[in-house]
Image 1 (cartoon, one colour):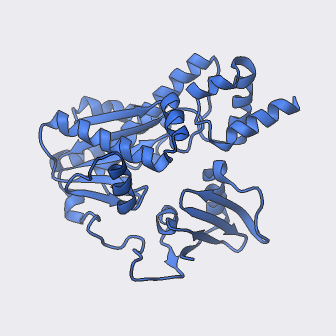
Image 2 (cartoon, rainbow, N blue to C red):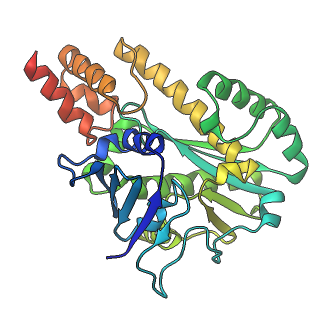
Length: 313
């Protein structure tokens, strides 16, 4: 079986466990800290610090956490960070281009938001001056402040929001979250191109799927990959356009969460922790389980855990 291996610190492994909270397996192998299963990949983290990624998407998943070593190399395999026809060059990243990123995919409550931003080479310095960088290193109040500044600078952007009702309908139809994200990025890009009135020099996507998988999702909906499209993991650290898109997407997600919290009459927490289970249980108790359709990604394990909490009350 093809696989990738990382050597990480205990702190990194526990951060991973939190990230994969909704996908954790009930049983774990001897000597392991956790096991999880996501689309196309099984992850097992051991006390020794070794993390094993197995399955067709092992490179993609492992590359989210570091530079993985493959223990089953083949001519058809693509190593993490290897240069492919879809890898943007430094020249592309430093020139005018579109960048896109999403928010809300790992959160039980709230929608998925995707934003595309077009940044010219001349605007790069000004965006850095107002604090545009990887949104993972920014707190929500900073993100909202910077997003407002981006809008004030008239940076062309587009935003697409997949609300929970539609998310749950698509999931019931058999759409994976990967396909949903693909179509959202594609829709956001088309909206931005329409706004710009021309085809941008390049489009850099913060990679969440292998290019061939991304193209397959598009083909299933009779869409094609635009020319000059590139994929890069951790792209928000290398592309100012992706960083700007990431901030706009996160800001929109925060606004949507605030709105949903107001509608629910309680604070809906971000993430997918045990505290989220507790909030979900309270929401079900007050409004019924059907209400979750409008607030949450109901296929997450949090729904079942919330129901279990209610039965114990």
